[in-house]
Length: 314
Picture 1 (tube, helix red, strand yellow):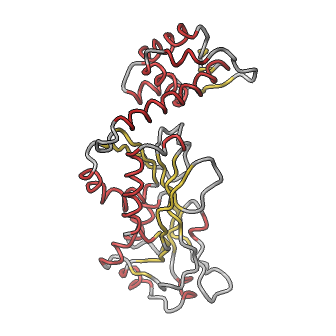
Picture 2 (cartoon, rainbow, N blue to C red):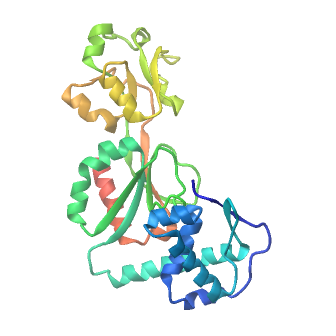
């Protein structure tokens, strides 16, 4: 695990940060910011594909030029000094301005450069992955890197430029763009229903078994229009991954509720049956792309968000 980084709770260094603008090595600034974001030298070196000693030399050069201590190393952690905290904030702005200038300088060219995307596993598997070849053909100079997590991430700490999330967004200082909505479907295989009985009313579901999501639990609640309370269905198994739940349902283990994009092709192909379409009482999920203000001017982000909007709608 990366070493923890702490900042002392005392007055931040008030030295002249203008010296940063005179540094010849932008790479040293980027290395220092990366070390802080990654939680230590070893993890940052792994991410960058360089040695920890190379990163250490970058920090040493910065400290010598600024004549301050940026990081203090202990046996089990790395501690960022108040001076280091001030420098890293200024360094982020310098690096962002540098990238913005590069965007202006290449405005007549096709969008290019790295773009790091974080998205839920089911969205990547069922929406992004089948269509990414189209985006790559249109923008071959954008190098996409995709990380999959189902929880809201720290965009800085996770090195993500954009995060795709489903549902209600928490209050934050991140910008977001709506990408569309997805409905809920309750499904089972025809073979499972042949063995266990085809329900004629939502209340009949209580005679079947449900493949449940470990979290969030509300996905397992089955409310229907016209019924005062949810239908309680016995649990067959609980799983912590949406794709695992889908595979279990496809294997004939029980019924489950999914976002439409996860099982639309299964329904169309006849592998799954849509139970009581239009009667499930569950609000559609919003699909949103979240990104930081500092990344909002990147053309490669802009064209990616535009493309996401088209595939989410269609």
